[in-house]
Image 1 (tube, rainbow, N blue to C red):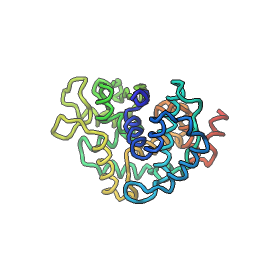
Image 2 (cartoon, rainbow, N blue to C red; image 1 turned 120 degrees about the horizontal axis):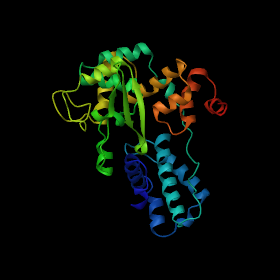
Image 3 (tube, rainbow, N blue to C red; image 1 turned 90 degrees about the vertical axis):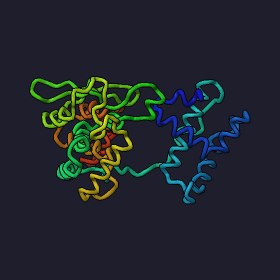
Image 4 (cartoon, helix red, strand yellow; image 1 turned 45 degrees about the vertical axis):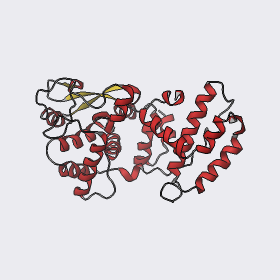
Length: 294
């Protein structure tokens, strides 16, 4: 429990708890028996190889991404025990399976973005899709994240108090991201106008995006479905998700010549080389080399 409490994200804590319970029972039993020192680098490598052959819940072998979640959970657990002085080293560190980067396959052209927005029903849903693209925000930064609210007791999503309208009609949104860090994201006049049109003199603490005709906030799961349905109606191939809009926002900004450190700030990336992934997609240049040269 103390280890999970140290996780910075409630979602990460939930995933890690399920992962250690479901896929790493053998490791957990060894630790609970006080024999964690038996698990060294070689043991960890053999365990990962067995994991690759192990069937998942539906009888199929675990995907590389699922194996990485197991490794990340165990690495986090061992790192916590190492800080507590319970183990000497972390045999799970730096053992992640290399995965292909599918970001380039999840980019929409500007025309596709326009078609996607137009395919969403008018009102709250269309404005939400527009806002997701126009801010590059994570879905949980604009919509209610029930899991996080239950764990932290703090509200999530975008509230009316987070919107500052400028004299020219544009606006600046205060977005709260990972680790409760806030950032300011400007939006153009048409976007600000569409968001303000949702207001019915709500109190400052109310959610901006609520179900049509209801006061219930749209959850991150509902937002995902809204975007997916709009993508299907727009005829866009693939299971379009809100994160596709975030990828597209970042790429389009860089294509327009916006400095990469500005894009980093707008996206709320902690590391510049994370934003550099989009540079590689646009230019074909290695993102690490590009960032190091700045």
